[in-house]
Structures are given as C-alpha cells and as structure tokens.
Amino acid sequence: MVYSRPHLPPPLTQERKDLYMQVGLHATGCTTAFIAARRADLVRESALFLKTLSHMWMQDGVDEADVWTELLRRVEVSELLHKLNQPPHRKKKNGSPSRPWRVTTSKLP
Image 1 (cartoon, one colour):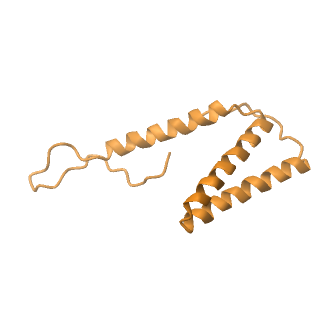
Image 2 (tube, one colour; image 1 turned 90 degrees about the vertical axis):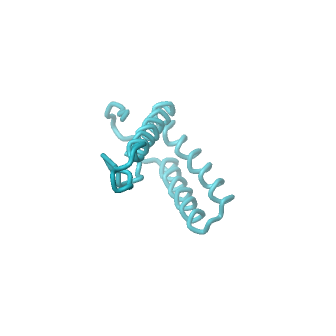
Image 3 (cartoon, one colour; image 1 turned 135 degrees about the horizontal axis):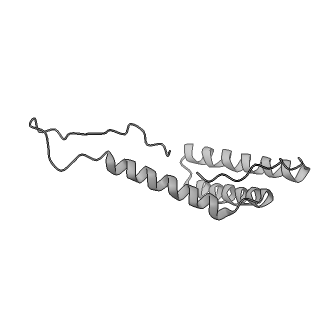
C-alpha cells in the first residue's frame, strides 16, 4: 500500500463540507442504481463519484497516480489469487480436481 506522510487535517470549510456531501450523494447514487439495475444511472453516478474523489485528492495534495497504482496492485493480487484457486491440470483418483489452496473470498485485498 502507498501511504503518504502524516499531515494535519485541513480546516473544515464550507467548501470541504459540500465536497463531502457530494461524494456521499454520488456513492449512494451508485449503490441505488446498482440495486435497481439502472445501468445508465450507475455509469453517470460512478463518473460523478470519481470526479468528486479527484477533487478531494487534489484538495489534500494526493497524487492521483498513487491512488491508481494502489488500485492496480490490488487488482493484480486479486487476479493472482484467482489463478491460484484454479484446479491443477490433473485430477485425483476419484476424478475430482484437487485444490491445494482454496481462496474463499472474492474481495480485493
């Protein structure tokens, strides 16, 4: 994981409160659209959520490249765990594939 050096929290201005409210509303909009299976709304709210997150990162001096690198690392680890969970090419004597190591979650690390 990429961790930035600790810093003092910025003052809680009205602009910052509005940004917090926006990111929360878009996150809720994403979840609602997903549950209701409204694909167009999900795409729109997801884009707005990411745009608002980008503004939050900019206000806190977070390099967007660090965030995307961390996300890519997590996806790659997830893909590795998925590959490790695939059955080997040979089967046991009873015909069922053996699983030397079983990953029981699909959550990203």
